[in-house]
Image 1 (cartoon, rainbow, N blue to C red):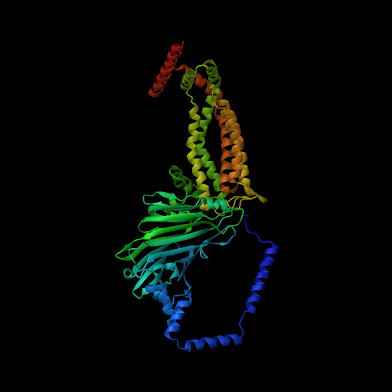
Image 2 (cartoon, rainbow, N blue to C red; image 1 turned 90 degrees about the horizontal axis):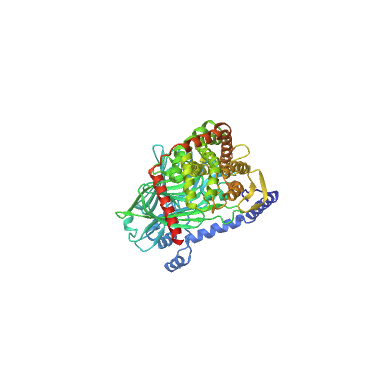
Length: 634
């Protein structure tokens, strides 16, 4: 099921479990006598002298607790040195504990852990998920950041296992957190975070000092960034469809890993790497282009019928370069909404991580539909803004629709003459084709003239198809019965799940399917009466009849889990198109006048262009060649 619901039995169960835990804690509470005995035993252990053999035995057998607080005992210090080698100094610092430092502004609240030195929690303050739960991009160990390197004493170190020393300062209005992994007082690996007020972008620098004597420069130093995307939306399948690992190349080229299958790629010259969770993104942006990166993605949704915590897991491995034996890499980290208005304010074209479509489709969205919808939604409710934008689009495209309808009218008027030509030259396909083309040319009509207007509308339709699922403004905006225009609307919950359809009934897709049925009924009927039947060609009439029913069914099934804003657009768009077609047919086009115009054009001598003359010559030559072959056979 898509939503989590608690019944009375679940509530009672949780209460019972809570009471049992309280009872167990109370029963296991030590008595005053046990506390006093433990304190006495501990004091005796501190005062008891240890010989060298006993100490050596302890080092070999006792496990090391890396999460312990500061190591003040000489025995523990020797144990840590034995394991950590040159970085044993970090385990003796007062910060060697599982503690964290908070960086916070009006938009973000971050927790940076001492262990590993990286961000252990990211809270986006302004947003909640479909269940009104606060949005966390990082939490409960769903993300990992690690630098893997070798040391001069042949050890393999992972920064995730080591303790950093934090120092929080300010630089003007900015908060600056320095996390240092120390080999000694003057030898360290440093993470530097800088948070600005009211900004989703966090400055992040990696540098080292004096580590050229500790780090083995002959071994590759890798930065590993791993994160699992939390589920935030009502529909698992819909959110997962737009959850992708995306990356920008030098030169504004944007690529992404495969959507559903596990994928692994090695890429070069990367400007940024984005772990996109549909409406929220985690983006790593280097100051200098990553020369190479190994990227991986894995789909974690095995069964959409079962509630899932995660959608996909992402991983990036980036080799870091030493400069003079030291690390010095400037970067930035973006944790925030996948919102064009926000991302366009940053350099390196981070807004291109939003899938608005490639080529002309993306250009239409970014240059026309995004500004238009931003303006309309600033003065109108979001649902009304969709309707108004749909009206504007259909009015702008109405001349194209008029051209298409005019072409169909001409073809319908010429159909009797085309039928006559087909009958007259039924045994001579070449002559039949020649006479048909001559008629089209003299009448100023063409079967292709009806296709061109439809092709001109395709970029607009596809651009809008990409716009609505990625429009952040629609997220959690209600209209009529739809609670969220960026997700599906629900008028009924089903007690079972229908494959490809879902476990709910959405009304907007039903309305859109009904509207597209009547639209196709009108347009297909016009085309069937306009297009002449060609001998030897497939029966287009039957195919069109099937499409009248197939397209609405496809709309009904496919869009049941899609954004209700997109279904609303298709519903209104088809209604307006039907209205425009009725107006054109009833008040604008006069078939008698069109017929008279065609007859007048047929009487005029038609001047052929070079291409038409060439085609005519080729057809005449082909006809002559055919006649010669027939004469030889006789």
